[in-house]
Amino acid sequence: MIELLPLLVSAFVLGLLGGGHCLGMCGGLMGALTMAIPPDQRAKRLRLLIAYNLGRVLSYAAAGFLIGLAGWAVANSPAAMAMRILAGLLLITMGLYLAGWWSGLTRVEGLGRGLWRQIQPIASRLMPVTSLPRALILGALWGWLPCGLVYSTLLWSASQGDALDSALLMLAFGIGTWPVLLATGLAAERLTALLRKRGVRVIGGVMVVLFGIWTLPGPHQLWLMGHGSAASQHDSHNH
Image (cartoon, rainbow, N blue to C red; front, side, top):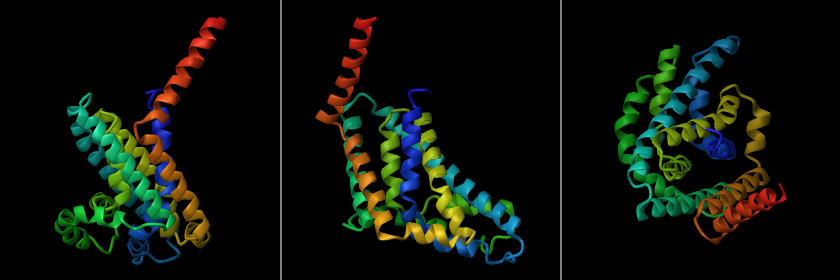
């Protein structure tokens, strides 16, 4: 678990940085979700938002577990390397998309539209949301909305080669998206306005691009590993 901790932090930060994208994908729903709740019932609105986001994050974890099984099945094979390369490339394109430099990732999101067409009518029947169970189920369904950021993170998590680790990473990623979507649902204009700023989106995009480069296997990975092992050997010689 200790070895997984840096990856969990990375997954959380990735969700946090992708908040601007989540704002575009789910921001409208966050407002619609609580329209039926009077403004003076702020506590009830918060409970519904928490239930919705809990369902959404749990669906990410379930997807992470399922695709993690595939990653486990191909672990230590050429397919595992290909999966890691694809994950890195998708993360780079996601960063370019977040920064507003290239929108090619929207084509990747089209891959999930067939499944979403089956789910959307069911999700629509749960609106307006007036109870916690409805909010939880709606969130669990909405978690399957086609999203390039989720797809990128799913492949990255699956490349770890362990289904449980993949589920935990997707859980951490989902929790990272909470601050933005909760703020949107609670009409926290200052935070949402900040996330829409060009400079903030560029910084987030660049960081995701760097994370994608770090994910790609290559000489930079060998250098990092070699540097770490050399440092440990140096310490052991000193002792």
